[in-house]
Length: 457
Image (cartoon, rainbow, N blue to C red):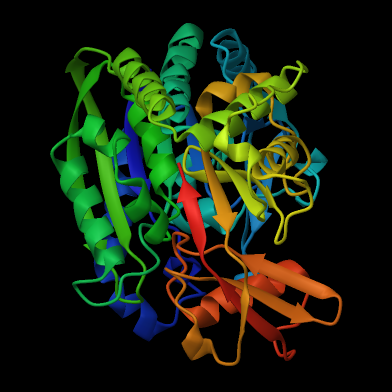
């Protein structure tokens, strides 16, 4: 049974012994709100707390639940010598993984220390807010830890609903803590970060779950937040339930939005899960029907390649069989890059073959990602960029990241960044990322070229 949930921030400076007195004075509203969350949980302690953290291991295409026998951690890297330990609720972990897989969600239970590149242990996303929970009650609860996933919001919401169902199957009394700051780009009242925070808080206060699921993806990306997906899983756990929302505090004295929001279940209401899935499928279907022919061809190539079928052949009169150009094929999944491979200059005899070659490479051979799986094909968005011939430039002032892509060169190292990418607003940012992609040092002198593209979606 789900009894209580809360969205909480996690800045290390909120922890006594880490934050200086002047810092703590600036977040008094957050501190008082966290003390209130502690009092509410202490008045009716759960058996298990399920916590979502954006600072554990991060997965693009799966939901991971840690199976460590005990969850341990400290904040010594921030100057706090305390350590914490909780027993894992392995029975709930097993039940949740089983139900997730039965629902055809990519849910896996793994020991945190077994994950490549991750040392295990509790991170500040958990320990900073949990430091406010009195040990008189919190030391007796068990903990289930779930790190960040970039699956679609629909799948995260679905998974959240399974948490409540799994607890009900086991007769387990649980609470959910969704750890996450809001925007990390709150600068003055008119910034995009401030707009994001205000919109999220307004929609939460009005219980507008559907509007949060349809949140503007561009604003979401530009907000540089780390709590939205934790919040969606929490709302999924409340699917089919009416609930009371209370905004305990919101402040952003350091340019990062800290919100403390609690949720109390109150009776039943209609489930929204199937509606969200239906809208998601319909949106993608509409996008696919509106593709430009060149994008439809790239999609057909990707799907044939992943299915290990013969690649589609263009008919003799197809316009793609004329002309040569460099081409980039980009794949996105739920707003996140899923693959992007291209050629600065043509290496095949026509644009059609260039698209074919780079579409296969983007789906199957981008070294940053695992090859696209069959189960992902219905979730991909496509774009194709045809490059005009690059021209040499001398100064950053000759660049406009919305209009021009950039090529940086240092010896044999060469890096490219396409134009008009979300979150790239200045020429300096554009060049810095292109350097990074080419393995060129931040302070190394580079030659610059700019180019324009024709982008098809």
